Length: 92
Image 1 (tube, rainbow, N blue to C red):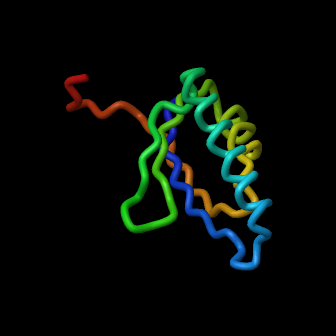
Image 2 (image 1 turned 30 degrees about the vertical axis):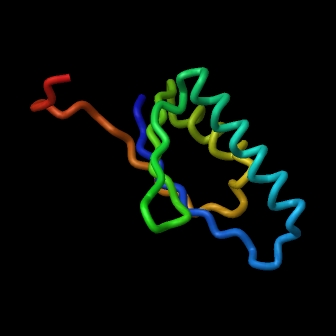
Image 3 (image 1 turned 90 degrees about the horizontal axis):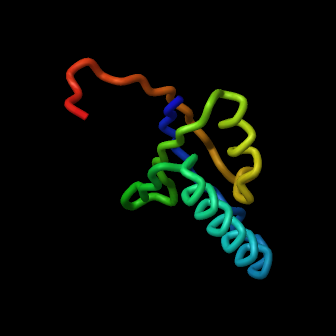
């Protein structure tokens, strides 16, 4: 199943700089691992925002939920999930 996932991040302004740095490093490592496994197909920055639009390909809703809850930045995210279906006019 394909899902479009928009993640908007809001880190606390008073977050400890060392915690911030280690959390961001862990997030990058986790995201890159999921990209290598093929579950996180696309990761796009939303211009001008601390947000991204990502495409996931996973077997079901439960797997997507599991992946999202494991994101190191999850506690600081507002997430919108949109299930995707093939459009009948697509050539791909």
